[in-house]
Length: 266
Image (cartoon, rainbow, N blue to C red):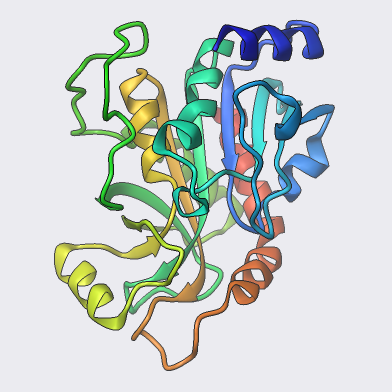
């Protein structure tokens, strides 16, 4: 860990971020717009390289609305063959760099039948159906407790901030529960029916491990899903990753405006 921190701080001249953002599939343009300097994951000790389309694999540093921000322009996923420890390592690095507020974003499939493509959903809770937990193994009390409370992973005050930003921008933000499976195959219609019965509103293959670790580390977490497709069985259309990228690109302007105003008001 220390070699990672030393490398980043030497490269960034001790730039101290207070807010961290993880940008999901097709949502990386925010980092392109505000990029002051960036480091490829492949250059950072301890980081693994993203292999998925729509994830550029850079750690981007910038000042947004007067706040120092570090952004993951693309994330690593459990389904790529990385361990839970590897995909959540950057979250611990952000904590060590000084980040106290983490904004997690993703592309997700609609389980809630009232959702439409291009909707933005504020995550109020999640269901971990990935079959693993990033906190397995020996605990390091430097980061958090052995048995962290999970009753409010997604900070209620931050949800109020993003809701106010959405109203100001005229966006009809949805609220909902995010259902995470390991992937890389999409869920079956039966699995989506099960998720709906359990109370899920959107499905994806990321975010939850990062949210668990951030909560464990004492960070305040805000989660936002871009509804880029309908989950299996919600429509008759076959699911393709290209559609996810295309829909995310179509809503990029609204997404950037929402994130920027939210950061300003945090």
